[in-house]
Image 1 (cartoon, rainbow, N blue to C red):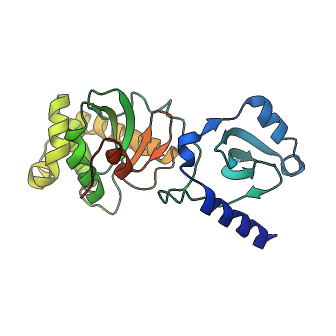
Image 2 (cartoon, rainbow, N blue to C red):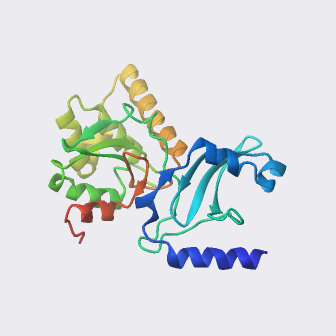
Image 3 (tube, helix red, strand yellow):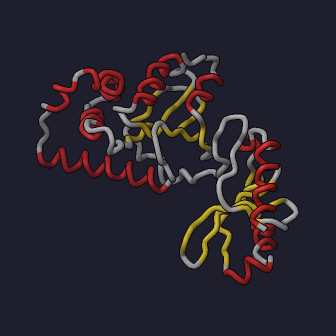
Length: 244
């Protein structure tokens, strides 16, 4: 059985093409039909949400209080557990996240364009800084909600996040996003009142916990407005920018 599942997974790996572009949510009626499958009834699997991605279904499930994500073949005869990878971009195929609770919790919004994105970033992450270096080229095309997600491996990331968020105006926050890491002495010597620091730390912790709830595991992590995970290089290429 395990070998059969591995073979099925291999087939999906070599035939899946940009599945995230074709994701659509499955109706409640079809979810109810899926829950009548014998395994689902025996294991008391509750399907929270389901998505049709062309070659198979992604199921967000709850099993006796534990959340998980599995894949169901379109003929509903095989369940795949583990990662399914899009061969075009190397990304794990996953269900869109629910961004309802994220809107309004961002540190600030960058850009005044029509296309909306959610960015979880670490101000000391080299890949984040690389992405940021290209943002001025697309600021008229995008609206990016910026959330800070400092990684423990970056010793100055939390201080930098607090410093950027502490700036009084939107323009000052944006300038600090681009420049603060180049002036660590100023960041380290920033003075906050006890109330200011408590407020900033609470806001940062909310953003971190939000990222964790959305399964953010590294930076930069970008979601489009529909909750699909977007590779930052692909985002830039979409707007005609070649990353060097």
